[in-house]
Image (tube, rainbow, N blue to C red; front, side, top):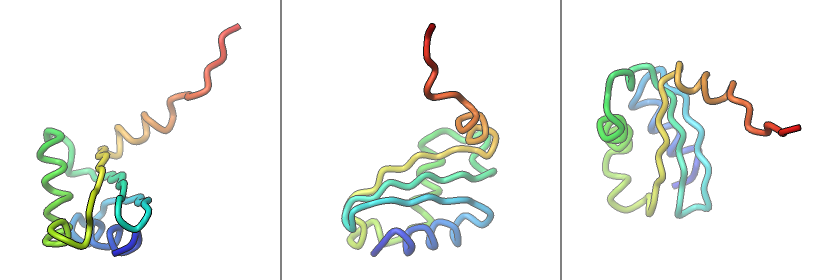
Length: 87
């Protein structure tokens, strides 16, 4: 299992989602942007992602860190300045 496999599984399971996956072949981190996360708790959002991965979480993926965002939350996050210098 590699980053592209995980990305594809999530995007197919959560149609319309945008997924960014990084990892070392055993441990992975997925950022998932999906409009249907709106109004759901973080636990519900993560369950949707795990559901998209199916049985892969039982063996092929050893560890997965998930960050979930609605498109609105993602846009706010990427527009937030991260390197603010004080004068």
